[in-house]
Length: 248
Image 1 (cartoon, helix red, strand yellow):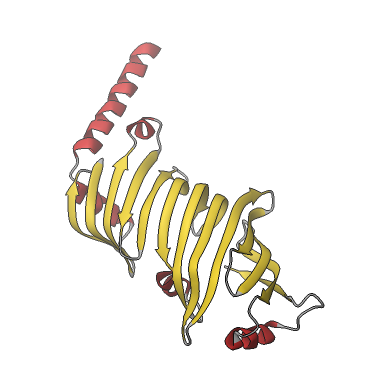
Image 2 (cartoon, rainbow, N blue to C red; image 1 turned 90 degrees about the vertical axis):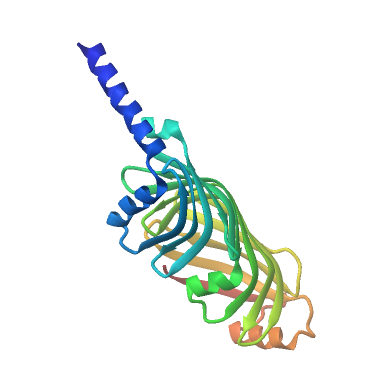
């Protein structure tokens, strides 16, 4: 009897895999829109299992040239793992997403490039940033909008402020790791007019702290000199101490 029930369950799972494998991607998007009313898509081809969209829009955010491939074994295990490839002008690369029944999202093998100007818009920064962010993450975990774990590196290449005034800043790198207190980032410069060293912590409750210091390599950079004066008084070593805290 138990063996018969097992065969029935296995057959149902196999049928579910078959349905997903043959369901047109356009129908799969329509089903998702019932749970995500702000989701829009255009140029959808392929199947729910392996497909592509010329444009995906969620809210006021657009992504172009999105391809996906579902891991079939994850469906049999009651989860959903999807390999995603992006080829948008402002964000491109690949990542593996694991969607858990409780709504958590696990990411692995993340290799993404994000235009810093696009990030400025998303984060609503007070100044417009230039350059690009390169994300290389071994793993990360999100629940809702909260980052609960991360391991890897984020590099800001050709870092700059482009508005209201233009000012190159150099290059910066953050090494991410997960601790018992939250996600920690060790941040430093990798050359350029600014010397930066610091440590940031994001807690599971959404609060963050940053402590570090900054100094100038080139005292002839008058705009940066004025900016550092606004940040605080330099110590005996010429570095300006920094400390910020808040909540995301």
